[in-house]
Image (cartoon, rainbow, N blue to C red; front, side, top):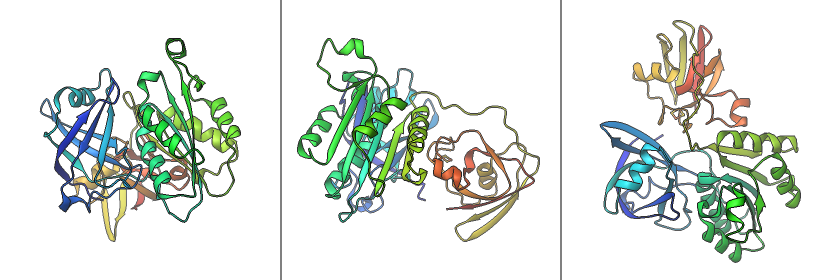
Length: 356
Ligand code: FES
């Protein structure tokens, strides 16, 4: 896992809607091999604001099948320190520090595959989903895409026109269902033939009934606030979808909820395998497993240290842990005993883990 940051110039900056800003980057030719990405991956940005390092993850929303394009779109949050910093201060030509593409919430188009993809997005959760949608349409010609996309109002819809263009270009392969939750404000001003209300169980069920899935070769990708991810995933499982076909990524429009007051057992022994090396340490009081590994200089992979990016995932082989936050874990991860080491406090005298 590459944790290096590169100083990259902003090639262009614009506001696709009032409350979002899009940054385009020109990656130097010599860095293109390490900036190769899969649809759905994100970049980690390092900012220095008020003399404090701030890390943020933003998904690349364009398709890697359109060469030379690297774009992220950031929703401007009312009290968001970094989103407002970006909107108010950055301009074309400025240098920002960014990581290489990260994350395993991805699709890997295969031109021979014939699959159905059901994509669920709310708000700026559309950004990785948009990269997936355009990549599948461009690079997997026998596959179909069904998108359920929720927003509050028409002016807040990211990629509104672009989605209409994809729909017009691929009418037999793309079906888009949109829903708006602030209906009374909008429908008198502009016609709306989409759904009304938030994405909820009924809407997910009716979306699936209107667009029946075939049991084989069907994948489900969800990106929205944590509650929505869980609700869509649970609804799909209730409808008989095996959890291994359900993938989701967390994004938050507000502060992340961490479980407070968790403690660790004293002096727990950690046995960790990182690539082919073995490390052993005793955790000091209420230290997370990742903090302990960093303290002894073990090369454990990590990035955000906030339970968001999933870079620090490891397989729990022995013992028990409690995690302060788990939003970066999929249902499949939980089933397979995958933990976020940056959030894990040991609950047994010995914990054995292996990094991917
Ligand atoms: S380092 Fe990002 S989730 Fe642990």
